[in-house]
Length: 452
Image (cartoon, rainbow, N blue to C red; front, side, top):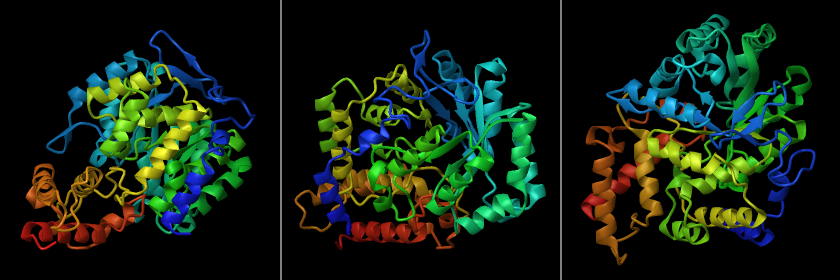
């Protein structure tokens, strides 16, 4: 079945099946979770960790996209963001040894250490992507470095990072099984230095399924998945290596494993939708932002523990708080509406980049995420003319070229890619990055020379 046929089938069938995704494994009705829903004086919605009884804020702070200046984290601004988030009920902070060019953990630790340890939960990861970090000694060093960078003697939520990437099961075995690291982490959980052990999933669903089959042995405390209203049904059409979020969430729900949600905005794509979709959303709910629809969709799923957001500006925090503090769960009509929106968005052939920056830094200085972001924005705004015969060719050409130079410095544009392929191996969305950069660069040259 091709993309168009799939979209027609999905639209005809409706989204009745999504109701099941908005019920817990026990069959509770929409918005009433096995994890429970509570709030405090801040208005924040909390979900209960079934193992520990901890009340976790439904909005989690993803420390992946921290504000940077000259390749250094703006610590003063991060401190301000963390203080504001804690003051307004956010208590879950997610980082990694590889975020922000390896500087996120330390910045997160610096910001949080000014607050009582019991007032927040820290999540970090064993991000041993590179083969030189697969050996046991190197992986254990990465683990211990996280404690030092964060300034803690225990980690609340620890993850095997991005399982299913690369060549799937073979890579998973090399990173976690053959070197004994999974056994080591299980021992660390038993000793209390890890309070909750889980994994984040990207890529080969066989690895995801295998780990869930082994749940009686490993007893996963939580699992982090990519979930949003576009990936709910269309993840595989966006990228053949991805898996529908409806399936991932459903499997976790059946086993009673809380889900932590990443990429609720699909790397910002669901906060910057085509104008015609903005109009539909505003007509349905004039007082809510475009991004709010995505956060409420994720939060409405009752077995979600927290929804992560990489917030780089104060207005991001403020808007997300309006969405989840407190959460007003979506009803079935709203869920149907979002699946109609998703079907419309699938008509745009955007690049499925989530701005995770795992591809960075490029050794040749190419700013891969910004190039893809600009291309996707122009496509959504109908500023990617197909030929000089387009009625708005001049306007669209200027918007694309001027916007490209403004958003990506010339020395970091796609024409500087030499095709080494280093970036593609690290991409959890399995985007063929060099070929996409070549395609965009060729398009830019045709626009400049007016040869469309």
